Length: 145
Image 1 (cartoon, rainbow, N blue to C red):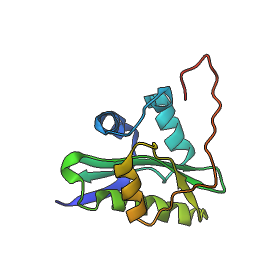
Image 2 (cartoon, rainbow, N blue to C red):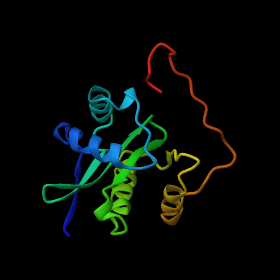
Image 3 (cartoon, rainbow, N blue to C red):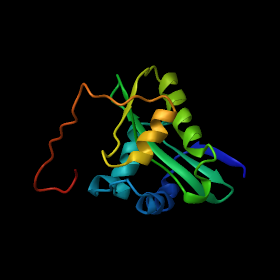
Image 4 (cartoon, one colour):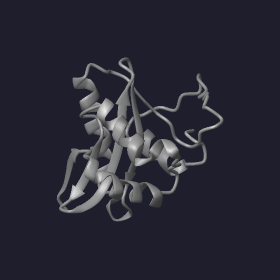
């Protein structure tokens, strides 16, 4: 296995979407359409990555910033590559890229019932916050939650 972490490119979208669809615990919505994801990546250059073993997609992650904090989203690793450090490599690359951009703190959201993901993130040193609640607002006429 020789996995290389590379910047997310538009041509990666179809393989990445297939990985997300196959990954338990990832919720996809209209906000994950090709157009929306590529616009997000373009607004946040150098922060989203794919992990490749030759031509095989081993993992992927989206990340962005609001200028103060980073936000890591949809980190997924293909089943054959789990437990081999690919998720850690992707997460570390995001944190490194955010640091270069002057962003010292990063957040992510994990579904409450996704114990496997919570354990993964805690193993990497992330902490569960119990002092805040996530609240959302979305246009009820558009499925963009």
